[in-house]
Length: 272
Length: 333
Image (cartoon, rainbow over all chains, first blue to last red; front, side, top):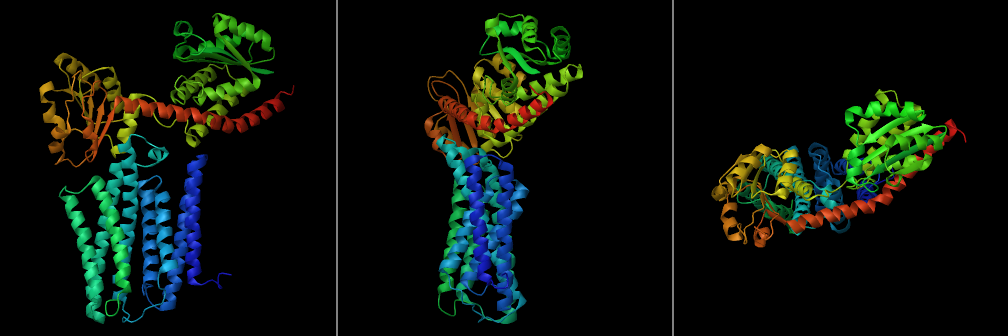
């Protein structure tokens, strides 16, 4: 049966597990009974979804003969994979309760956009080079870090709103302290920014190896780098924190994703 | 064979009666052994807390054991309740789960029952039935606490403030609390924060002696009442409880102090009239709670705990049935 499955089927199957993760969270929310085992079930569903995403990327990589970042569909699915990877690493490390509940819908949504709306025709115009793969993969992994930072920022805003409203709901007890959430989102943005920087350096090397700049993507990459770098600099200077930080993290991630798709839609020679 | 509990609690007896009957923790083992030797109970354990005194036993003659236990307790009969077999087991399990406590869902009772059982066991007063009864009770309590919301959310003003602080700050250890004005609620709130690990406490009061005394109790530092605005930028949590007839902390005063802060500010205003202008709560990264907010949250938490009682009883029912089955197999009717 597995042999009959296409690579896209694996992504659909991954979506099923992200829905299951959401359902487990809902159950945990509703009945509270056996919360510990449901928490494990939630994490296992996310892990299974991640493995299926990995299977999709592996099969697609074999099919296109390079890192599967040849069109907007693959790239978007790669961003979702990166966000899931960061969740699997960050969740147990920081013991962030309920992070899975916020991550699953975001990953589900990003993959759904890819599956339903984005062009899935492999675009192999660029010459193949390991440096191109390195540049693209690291850059997209950075986007995964930004995605999870946005998820954590969403948790911050939810918790902050409950604190401000003086009416704590049940999620109040499940979510961590706002200060903790802010620190985690800042660290994720920092990791994402460092990865983006490394990816861009890889892009410079790729340019020397295989040739021409793609001006649209280059300008977009520099804009994203400046935006996140500027945000980190403002935070370091003490000018950006709390609610404004959280809102900006989410806004920048959404802006980055939307503009990336727009750049991808642009006519040659802007797209790779 | 019958299981039996006879006792009194905060609902059946006033504190004057309970304090007369209370047994010191160090005497619980002797009391259990004495109870077993003098009442004909085959197994016995005495539980004594500030809110209840109860004797648990296993007997072949429940009526005779009941009379003897009532003599042992020596209080007017209308203060006492008596439960047997299934009701006895259910009662103990609800006690350890905090369902029968004055503060619903409180967790201190579990430790008190564990101490009472350990003392009775060490004194040789318990046997296989009470050992199993208490061990199963502790396991049930753990299960109930981890899988229901019976112990979730504080039900006192001081602990609500601590809960909120823990949802604002990542770690309370580096936090400094400033208490402006001393009073009973500010004292309990500061103590609750101290117990949860806040690093420093600054106390200022119009009465320097009172400030010093309060600070000494808390392991904090007294500062002059007029100097509190100077210390304001250094603190993370402020408890205001002065008798001032107007706000002493206003948004206009606070705004410039926030420009260089890198952490949230938690303002707990427990004074009436309020000492902190309501507009301060609209400032970014400032979380302002007055006494009504805290009391409302405490009441909501208590109501939420009350809604959990049925859920707890449902979860206990299965375990109760299993214990009953074990008991009936051991002692067929």
